[in-house]
Length: 161
Ligand SMILES: CC(C)(COP(=O)(O)OP(=O)(O)OC[C@H]1O[C@@H](n2cnc3c(N)ncnc32)[C@H](O)[C@@H]1OP(=O)(O)O)[C@@H](O)C(=O)NCCC(=O)NCCS
Image (tube, rainbow, N blue to C red; front, side, top):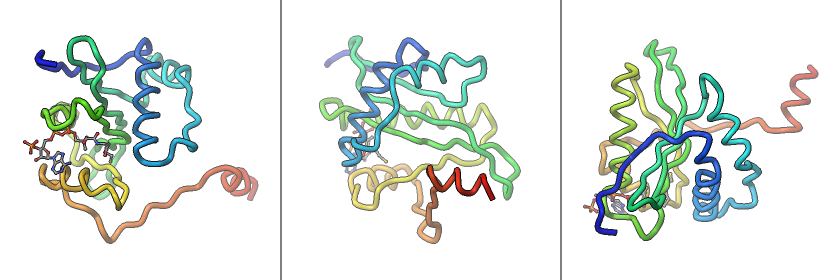
C-alpha cells in the first residue's frame, strides 16, 4: 500500500463495489439488517442522464479503499444549494492515511464549484472516532435538531389522507 491513493467519480460499472462498501459501513454501524439496496439499484441511479446520487471512490493500487456518497439539497434560509453526505467510509486497513480527509476535501471542492453554502451529514451518537474526525475538520454538531423519518406503511397511510 505504498502507492498514493486516487479519488475518482464512480459510474454504473462501480455499482457492485459501492454496494460492498455500503454493506461494510452498515455492518460497522450495526445496521446491516436494514440494507435492502442491490448493485442494480446503484447501477440504475448512476446511469441516469442527471443522477440524483453521486459517489467518490478512493482507490490505491487498483483496490477500493473507501467512498463518499452524496447528493444535493437546498437551504431556503441561505437560498443556495448544499451537499448532503449520506455515507463516508474508509476500509479499516486504509484508515489514518488521509483518505477520509481527501474524500471530504474533494467534496468541499465540488461544493465550492457548485456554489453550495453547506455540507451536512449525520453521525451515530456512539461513533466517537468519527465525531472527533469531523470536529478536527471544523464541523459542528447541530445539537438542537432532531431527525425525523417517514417509512412505509406510514407513507402509504399519509398519501391516502
Ligand atoms: C471516520 C473515517 C472516515 C476517517 O477516515 P480516515 O481515512 O481514517 O481519516 P484520515 O486519515 O483522513 O484522518 C485525518 C485526521 O482526522 C482525525 N481522525 C481520523 N480518525 C480519527 C479517530 N479515529 N480519532 C481521532 N481523530 C481521528 C485525525 O486528526 C487524523 O489525522 P492524523 O491521522 O494525522 O492524526 C474512517 O475512520 C472510517 O471510515 N470509519 C468507520 C466508518 C465511519 O465511522 N464512517 C463515518 C460514519 S458517519
